[in-house]
Picture 1 (cartoon, rainbow, N blue to C red):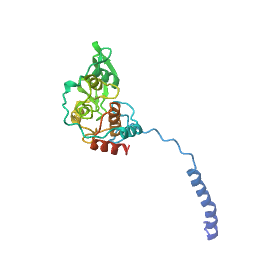
Picture 2: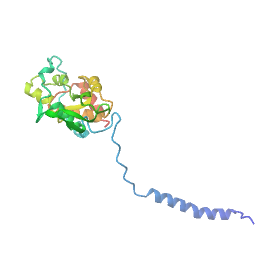
Picture 3: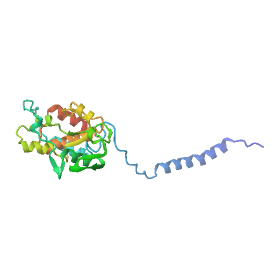
Picture 4: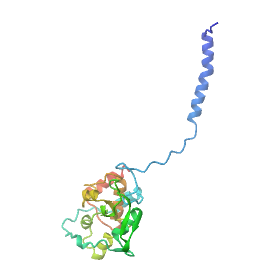
Length: 230
């Protein structure tokens, strides 16, 4: 014999079922939030990252440092000669600035006589390309020497220029030759890397602040605009 639902039966069933469904939904919504997994290392342009050369990018510190830098027109009348900025001088034992940068920014780096780097693995922070041949890498000056010359350093001594040109702590970055050639001596208003732009401009500001360099207005505004979205 079939079972026939009456209006009374249906209402009674709903009266029992609906509260149970609502209670289950409320219980689910009140469960403690689980801690999200740590985000993957950023690779997209504009993502906050480590800063070029593998150093952590402190965006907040970069914003504060940017506010303290002097904005002034580029000193385009200054005479620039690369030879006036002695580079690849010894910085650690027999290691010159280039070899030291390769040693500190690579993985599984091997060296031979006189600290010559013979092997290792490097990831170029500008384009993400992995390089295993030391000679295929360029060592970039974060703020290029020609740009540094135009940034309020006209009165620097040769010793000051040499110290800047061999600063392995914040200035020098191991990158692919292709990305370094694309950058040239341009500031962030004219060129930015394909990857980690937040980290890149944060380190740019760190360098300019450390050496009390100036920024031109377009350079300042480009950097401020990027940091505002990091």
